[in-house]
Every structure is written in structure tokens, then in C-alpha cells.
Image 1 (cartoon, rainbow, N blue to C red):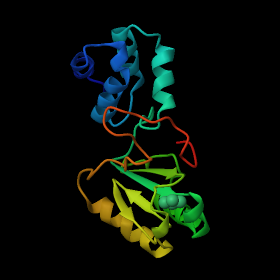
Image 2 (cartoon, protein in one colour):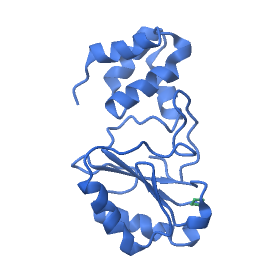
Image 3 (cartoon, rainbow, N blue to C red):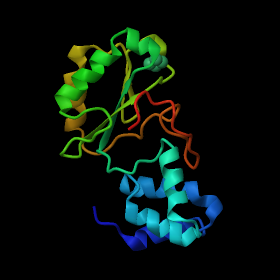
Image 4 (spheres, rainbow, N blue to C red):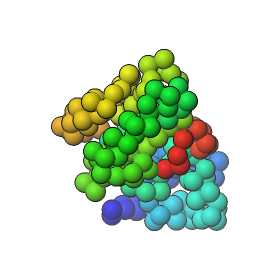
Length: 183
Ligand code: FES
């Protein structure tokens, strides 16, 4: 993906290029490119006056950030205990089979990024799958295909991933650690 240095700079400038605003800057860049390109991280490091390794450290610490390009749709399969005992692992395997990629990866057409999460806070309706912020409870193997089809047909990304545990509220970020599998 081509990085627009001027666009990145405008996002840095929006936060006055301040070190203390590093997370806010990275959140804006993540939103603009749907991931954090290495080139943009270098530009941020120079602008805020931090070593690149420190900026990368922040980017890898928080689950809100991704260093790899992400798909248009983010599909989260819950593997928390309640979902796991109700077949969450089998649901994940079905998504992996139908999308043709393992958890943590993005389909070659950049349409879906498949991820796992440890708990989405709605255990009673497990197994739970969330696509672009939309929750699907009591998921069965038969529902996997229709869920994928629905978002394959959908044009643009509907909503960001749920913020409760998957991603932080705007301008904040939570450390990684709740995901069942690191992505
Ligand atoms: S374990 Fe899946 S929502 Fe809690």
C-alpha cells in the first residue's frame, strides 16, 4: 500500500506532534490506513522525537493496533470459556475453512481479517461471533456461510470492531492480552 506522507503528517500535526499524544496519533493513522504501515511509524518516530523501537513497542503493545494490513471486514470468533464449551473452536475452524485463512490472517482479496478473542462480555449467547461490530449469538456451523455471504455482499465496512474488549474507545487503547490467540 502506498503511504501518503502528507496525509500522515497532517494526522501528526493534528496532535501537534507531541510525544504525549503518541497513542492518539497512532489511532488516527490506524484509522486512515486500517493498519500502521512501517513507513508511517518511522515518520511518527521522527516527528515526536522518539526512537522507532519505542513507537513500535507501543504499536505492538496495544491490541487496537495492527502492523499488518487488515481486511475490509473484521471477523472475531470468541474462544472464551463459555463460548469454547459451546463449540467456539469448531466455529473458528469453519470460518478458517470457508475463508481459507487461519485466525490472525487476512484473506488474499483483503475482504476479511479473521481474529479470535477471549471474551466479548455476552457469554450467555455463546458461541459468539462479531463482524464489524455486529454480534451473532448462538452461532452454529450452518450460520457461518450466511454470515460470510452477508458481509461479502456488503459494500463498505459497517462499524469498527466491538470496543468492550477487542478495541479501546477512541483515543484510548488497551494492552493486548485478552485475545485467545495473538493476531
Ligand atoms: S466467553 Fe464468549 S462472550 Fe464470554
